[in-house]
Length: 200
Length: 174
Image (cartoon, each protein chain N blue to C red):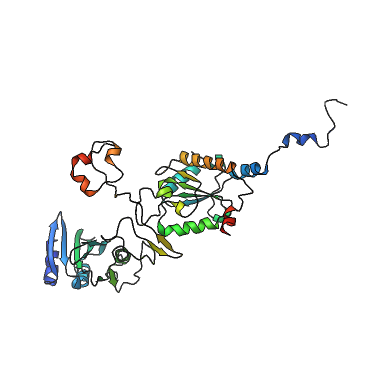
């Protein structure tokens, strides 16, 4: 495994920004511009023939805001590799890897649907979970859990859900269900134990 | 000639087979005992709905075993499961295709109120879109609860003005 990481570092000396090793899993932080080159290298030279997952992270309030995460696996060598690349909010565009691993097609559609990151040269970049015409990207941190109003006539509509002061948080305690699961609990309430063990 | 026979204007054999009733009561009796469900199975409640129609619980004891997957042949829509916004207008459209008289059972917490899904993606109760006659609590409800809801719907139908409400929704919309 170490050799593979060294091979990537040797092949792309300027692209690998950081590497971490934790519980037998390597994570490489790479620059977005060399994402496709490193992916091709990983598949063709190092044998990472299985793309487990493509996901994205919203570091709201930081710059760059988004981060793409690619989970690779080599079925032959039974090793795992994680690639991370930062994406700024301004361009919000990532080159597709769906031609390298066809499995990326729907994963990238999900990332586009939920996070609003567009994939350049993707063959079919449509929403996959929400309906066509939904104006938001609901997994962004600035999108409220209860949702927003939207209306696509004849297709779907949405209204904010009543959270009644929620979201509802369960706390570990020996109390009854009423104590454990109050109707609503705010994050600041969780700091004082008297409020955690609230009397029903 | 026996004196046990009395001269009557009709064949005495059918005398015991004639009952006097009201049109409403007769029609309601027929309707409530052959409710053909439209199984709108959307989530895990649909599994309990299937269990209710299989042999252990046997929904056919109450005349509702004829699951119709065509809305045009159905009397009661059983909304069993989470109604997402993406699915909501499709459910509404199927409801609109059902001929009157028609009824709706909201089966389970999700169909009744959104349930545990206080979320941007889930309609907070199917009664936002279509009129619901019976709500069944539970997550998911046991088949017995569905049968209880069905019996409550039958009781409700027995109290309706059958002819008067035949085309109520249609008339209201005009």
